[in-house]
Length: 318
Image (tube, rainbow, N blue to C red; front, top):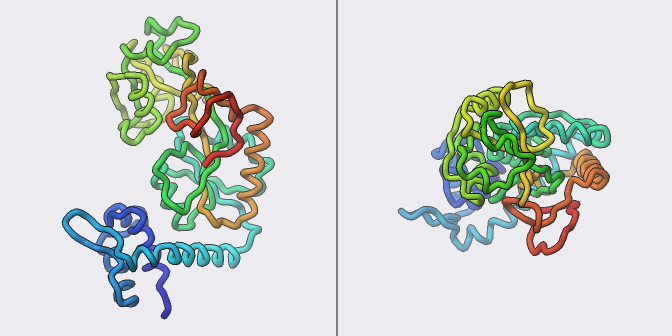
């Protein structure tokens, strides 16, 4: 029996999502095309892989048995493609979270990472899809759950976050601010908070009730909008170079200090040697510059490392 890998990939994605619409979106297919691939696979195997009813889809017993070896089949196929392409090609790395300038960190490790080709993903879901399709080898940005099975990540950098306020704000003259002091201000976001996980979690954790969204037209535009109203503020990692926009001020946040977590993300089974060089370069830089220092009594992370009680430095996570 010869399996069609496109059909197997459609099954695995649908089994992980348990939602044909989301699975179709991940694979850049129409839902009808995804359903046809799965139906043909079920016909070939002579058994149903999903129960379909008004409440959704779920795996049959045959589907549950088929899922693990199906994942292994796809991993082996991806490894065969990597072998055929050779290992002398550059490592393809996408970045996302562009307003927070992820290239700053990649630039600091690039010399030790070998040949890289940098692309630009729109957001975590689009980068995840590119990884799963094999269009890229790795990605760099903020990773947050839930992640698709078959993907791995490593924490690279924890960066303190500043509040950026209008210079006319009564808080702008403070040498530092506690996050709770921003409760009377308006969190100005470059897009829907539902798509901006870090800002959404910050507002929820520290009781920021007033939020407003704009269109992401770049950092200079965001800062100009903040400068227009003394009640507005936004958040930026402390090392992001600010454009020359009059009327704004960056103020450190303390008690606790929010940390923005940068991670590498890749598909498990990726055999490109450049991935090992890149993770090694990141780990060496993080050790030298103390990028991964985290004190739960002093700092805040939306997803803190589990079971932390003492000050530690994290070389990897995930």
